[in-house]
Image 1 (cartoon, rainbow, N blue to C red):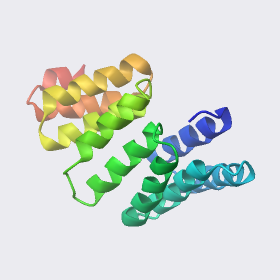
Image 2 (image 1 turned 90 degrees about the vertical axis):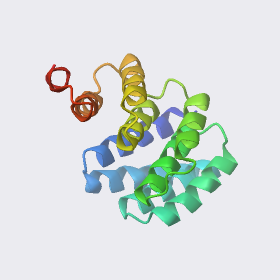
Image 3 (image 1 turned 180 degrees about the vertical axis):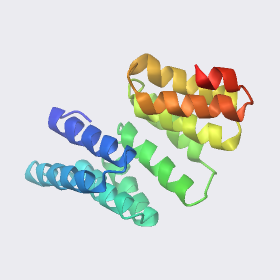
Length: 166
């Protein structure tokens, strides 16, 4: 995500999807895709096409586009993140952690990847490691409410209700 306009659209799409505002997500995807086409940026075109597929819950199609985005730009942490999420949505666990780690390696300051890795690890029952990921996400983006919510869920899963309520 080098171009500021792509970064802006990506974050708007991410936020809209996170809060299930699919109409807004589609609007931002359309705008991001249009910009990518105007700038003839293949990696971004593939990334935004993948977002359409994600919104439509066609995770296999999204993975195809994300693979093309990654091939075009191996430094695209968000594409690794989204591929990991798509695999998880399909019930495939193998390789998901590694995709999150690749995304973090290329974009270590992108809170969303740390957050989503924490979500995934919590789902696997790896609560302590999940908390580390959530804490890293909050270190990067302290006002990220959804991460606090997921941390509370993790503490609850650990049987630590008091910490979950803090």
